[in-house]
Image (cartoon, rainbow, N blue to C red; front, side, top):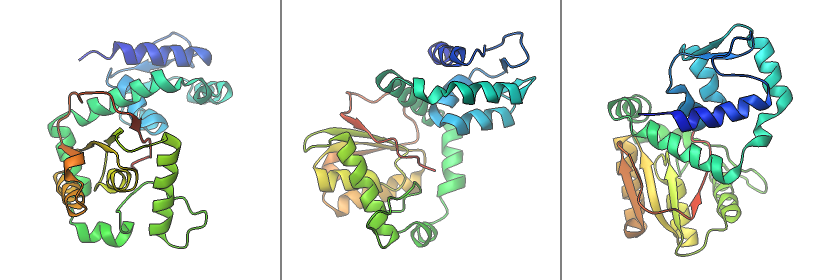
Length: 231
C-alpha cells in the first residue's frame, strides 16, 4: 500500500512551520514507518503523539519542533473538502487492516453491553456531550447529535457515512429524527450486532447498513460525515 498522497499533504502542512520530513535540521522529523502518514490524518494530534511513542518517527529537538508547529497554527491551514478526503481515506485504511482491527475491537469493546450501558448512558456514546439546557447525560448526548445534524444540514433522503459508529447511537438518531439513510462502520462484532439490533428495533434497518471489520471501499458519495471524536 502506498502512502504517498498522505506524505505529500503532511509535507505541505509542515512546510508552513518550516519543518521537513527526513530533513537534516535538528527540528525536522525522521519517519521510520510510512503508516504514520495515514495515522496522523486518521487520529490527528493523538496519532502524532502515539506515533512517536511507538517509534514511528522521532526528532532530535522535540521542543523546537513543537514550538514551530504551535507558532504556525497548522490547524488553521486545513482545507475542509480536500482534508476531509484524507481523513476518510485514512480511517478506512485503519479499519481495513483486517486482523489488527478485529483484535482491537475485541480488546476494547467486547466486554459485554451491561458495562457500557451503565457507564455511557442510553445511546452508549464515548464522545463529548453538549450540556447547554441539558439536565442529564442522555439529554446532553441528544443535544450534541442534534447540533451535529443541523451543522451538516441533514435532510430526509440524504446518505451519511459513520466511521467508527460504536453501538449505532449516532446513525440511529440521524435516521430516526432526520430521515437519512447511511452506512455505519465498526471493527467490533459486538458493536455491529448491537447497532443492527438498535436500528431493527426502531424499524430503521432498511435505511442503515452496518459493515463489520474489513472495509476497503464504500460505494457512492455520502452527503454528510459526522466528525464526532469516537474516544
